[in-house]
Each structure stands twice: as structure tokens, then as C-alpha cells.
Length: 358
Image (cartoon, rainbow, N blue to C red):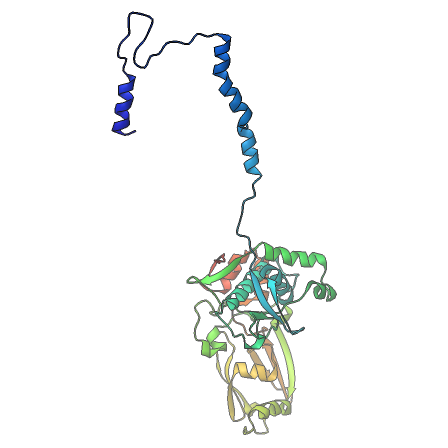
């Protein structure tokens, strides 16, 4: 208390003195006799307080019943459903269940499914915020369900019709729910979380696939172990040399060929991950990515053999563009005991796995 109040307290605490008679002066008044009437008057205010004021425990109970308001408004996303040609708004977490169900086999390790859920969530939200990609192919929607442009998606009914069951759907739903609102960032910004089926043993740096995008720190080539046990690891396709020449001529009408495929087909350079960087077909040179698209090949990690003078066998390793997370690799790491966070940090160099900032 301050000095002024302290002085008042001291002044009124002094006893000015006591008279010789029955009366007292100053602060000390005459005593009230303890008759039944006076006792009743003294306790009456206490009785009124007990009647009018509820007990403390009732107050606590009443306060406990008041609901606590939380900011639990779900995030929504605008989706173009390619199969139905419909644009609709969807709850993000519900949408992600269909993405994970379509993009990754439900038989995969649960930690791999969680990693896929985080990658899919980061992909969708980053597109919704306009950080990557274009909206022209899905009429202004945030994302579409075309896997060649955005992410695949499947409804629960379609999932059940194509071999999945309710237990499998619940497993996927749990993977999404247990990572709710978790995304990947780099230097404080949502990343571009590209992923593919199988890397063939090593992922690819983004600039080797999309040179116009340049280098991206978190999309670098990394060794990816134990993928050879998956069906997507290796494939073989046999073409006639005439088939290949026809496809090339459709795109490059002025190309010239010799009659010997062993002389007309030459690998000029490889990327750091062992994929074809540049190849020559006849008189035309093209990137390995263009050859993959032209012949509809699984990847650009290719080997060639010539069973006869008019045939070319192309052996491919891996499935997909090879950039970012390998889904088969994620499953292999999950089986080794990696958490979903460790899987993501393995494939996306230097990223942070954190809760989405609204």
C-alpha cells in the first residue's frame, strides 16, 4: 500500500484515551449486549447470503458446462473431377482420403501411407495458394483428378468396386487423420512435393526433367534402396524399328534414317542418376524425357538391345518421372521402421514437416 493509505491506517489505529466511566471515545464504541434479538440481527445477513448466493461448487459446475469455442473450421478445396467434368468444393481431409486411395496401394506400410497423405496435402494446399502449377487445365479449380497434371482421386464406392474393402478404406482414412494439417515446408514456404511410383534405385533432380524450372534445393537426386522387389522396378517393351521411325517422323517430318537401328540409335549423355539426358534417333537429337513421352515408356532409365535387325527391346528401370518421393521406396523404408516424417525427410532434402499455418 502507498504512504498515504498507510498514514490513514496508523491515525485511526491510535487509542485517543479511555474515560473513567462506562463510555469510550474515538474508535472504541459501546458494546452491544448479546440478547437473542441482537444475535438474530447479527446472523441475519449471513443467512440471506447463503440463500441468495449459490455455493461455490455449483458455480464451478455451471462454468464447466460452458462450451469452449475453438477454431476448428475445416479447410476446403475446389476440385475439378475429370471423369464427371464437375467442379465442386470439398473438405480437404476428406478429399485426401480419395487421393491416397488412388495414388498408393492400400497394402503399403502405414507410415508410407502417412507420408503420401502429407505429400498429397502439401500438393493440394500449395496449388490452392497459387504457388505452383497452372489452373488452365482444370478451369480455375485448385486441383484436378488427372494424375498426369495433378493428383489421382477415387471415391469410396469406386474403391470398393475395384477390389478394396472397408477395412482398407479405414486404414487409409486413419493415415490421413493421424497427419491432419501436417505439411512440408522449405525456408518457411510450402514445397512442391512431387512424387512417383518407383525410382529404379535413385531419384532424379528436378532440373533434369523440367529444365525450365531450374534447380530446387529439396528436389535433388538421392539413392533409394530396396525398390527392386517391386513390379514397377523393371519392365521390357519390344518395338519394331519401323514403329519407332514412324513415331519420330510424325513429330519430326524432316528426320532421316539409315536402315540399321544400331547406327540410328545412340545415347549421347546421361543424368547424374543414370537416366538418359539426351539421345539421337536418326538425324534428330532429343531429351530422354521426350523419348519417354514419344514411346510411352515407364521412365527414362533405359537400356537398348536388338533381338534382330528390325526389332528394338527397351528395358526400363523405375516408373514415373523419378523426382521427389518414390512410393515404393517409401513403403520399403516404412517396413524398415522409418516414421513418415523420416521418409519425407529422406526424399525431400532439407525440408521441415510441420503443422499448416492458416
